[in-house]
Structure formats: structure tokens, C-alpha cells
Length: 266
Image 1: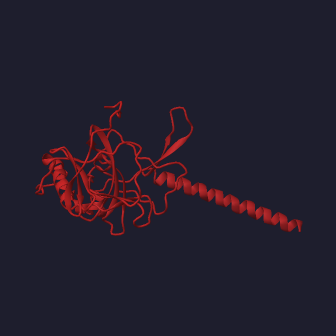
Image 2: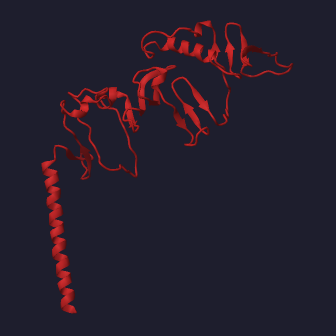
Image 3: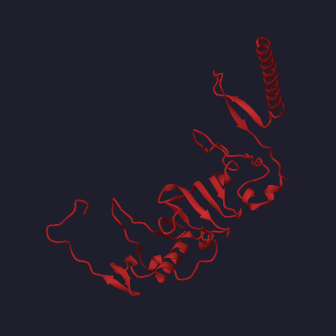
């Protein structure tokens, strides 16, 4: 029994040693041969701890560069090929996309921070930051592109927020939002302030993003033209609140505040 035990122990030690040596050799092989693509970088000047960097080569002949979903917004002459992980990425911390001194070709146009493609390999969820400025502030954006790659209304699918149950959540597209759930506000509701200067019957020629202001006027006209009963807006030309009832636009009757009622914000 003792001899058998000692023999088993020796075998375990020998095979364990071989495993350690083999692993060390494999690590050395990966580190030496692939150091161009895998690098350990010191955490700080006086630190003994490291962080990891991964690299891909720049190759203008890469076959994927021929596909719009890969090359769009990038310059293959300065952009490395995509680095692929054939597995599920999981982290107990977070995934972060940061800008740098050379954002162009680091993110698409320096704006895109995430893209997720549908099974048609064309429709995609896109998240961007600081591509546009609205009302004096930079904008972070999130939308679902369809297979029509332009800025028309047809180019955008619905982006659902709330749940995966049909008619029980909130849908957003380019010029329309549909709320199947209730809406509770903790502040004021402002009606659309629309007059003749905010309407355009004809569709403007050219790209909608380049003609954003005129395109928005056409959207106003189109939505009011095709609106259903219950549609309401403020007519800024005539200073009335208009509402559609049984297919007819009507004036909503309003009155002066009752005597003794006033507001500090008047």
C-alpha cells in the first residue's frame, strides 16, 4: 500500500511538472511570437502591475473593407482591421469607449460608440455621441437604422423601450413616438407651437439632414394632414388651441383664470 501511494505521488509530481513547463513554454511562445498583437503595459511609472493591449494590422486589401458595414466612416489606410473575439465577452466591471487625440478612425467619424447588427447584417442599432448640437448642447443619440441607408423617414425602424411585449411599451422612430403605456409628467406639457412659418407642403429636395429645418416643416405638415381625432396643437398665427374631432379641426374654448387665481411665475 505504501509503495503504491508513493508511486502515485511521484507520478502526480512528474506530470504536474510537465504541465507547468508546457504552460510556461506556451506562454513564452505567445508572448514572443505575437508581441506585435499582444502587449503588457506598465500601469504607472513606479508600478509593478501591468495592463493588456491588443492590436490588429492595417491592411487595405482586407476583404471586409469591401462591405459598407465595415468600411463606412473609416479610412482603411489608417484604420486597423477589426479584432474578433470568437466567444462571449463578459466583464465584472464595464465596457467603455473613450475619445483621444485622434478620434477619427478610432470611432466611426469620431462619433459612433456602439453598433449592433440584426440578422440581415444591414439593419443596425447605433449609438453616437457629439455628432450634433441641439438647442445649444451636444447630443448623445440612439436609433435603429433599417436597410435604406439615408436620412429619410423610411431609413429608421422602431426603437422599443419598456418591454418586449407588443403594444405594451414605448416606440420611437425618426419623426414619431408611440406610447402604448400611460404618460405621467412631473412638470408642464407644452403643445406644438405651429404657424404658417412652421409648415411646408412639399418635400424638400436633397438629403434630409442637410435640409433639416425645411424637412422638419414638411413633417409638421404631413403629420397634421394625416392626423386622427384627438390631435391637438397650438395655432401660433391665430393664438388658439386647435383639436381634431370627427375629422374636423375645431377651436378649443378657453377662459380667463378665475378671479383671485394667479401664479408666481406669471
